[in-house]
Length: 274
Image (cartoon, rainbow, N blue to C red; front, side):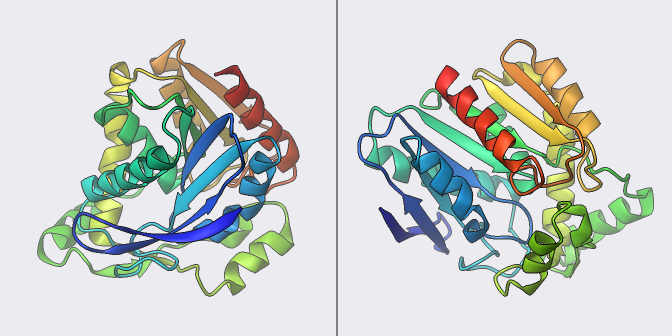
């Protein structure tokens, strides 16, 4: 059963959501997607998990997809964490005793990683973190970071193009072309969102000791957008609660690339083990 829903964020913004439900689920997953995209790009992930008795919930990030907000902007990174909390509360109201997992990709991986280190995770069975933006594959210049700090103070909602090369998403040219042609995707990022996500990613590396739940972290070896090396360092610092998987010959979107079936089977196996 698939239904749309609307969540009202703490600042009154409407967040567009969708739920893919199964009868008597053995687990439920809440998804946080990446920069510039929307939850519709995860339909196949939801359907795969549904076929294995796992329900799936997701909302478009504020400023993304069909949710309200200026494209590519958030008033603060903390507000994104609050939005995740709203989604988890919605899922928990649906399933009181079902194991609940968070799943974040790219910017969503940054948000989920910060969530599990900063928030109460007693109700979470674990988190799945795909190609997280902890650091980028390329190092922004000192000038770029200073410029972002300057505009974040005086004009935080100023947006620029995010510089995404869609060829870096996957090896599948049809997937990459579909991304370009999808009217719900955008190529914007604000000074505030860039700066706070950049700083929040670095913060996670210094606060791995705050993690209390099992984490599955995976990355493609050919990712030119976010750093697989940093994901490995993060997992090593977390220690025994973290499982890390590097996928050879895979780019930024493991769930959409040449090994997507193997990736989804890995996610399923990890969920079944937790």
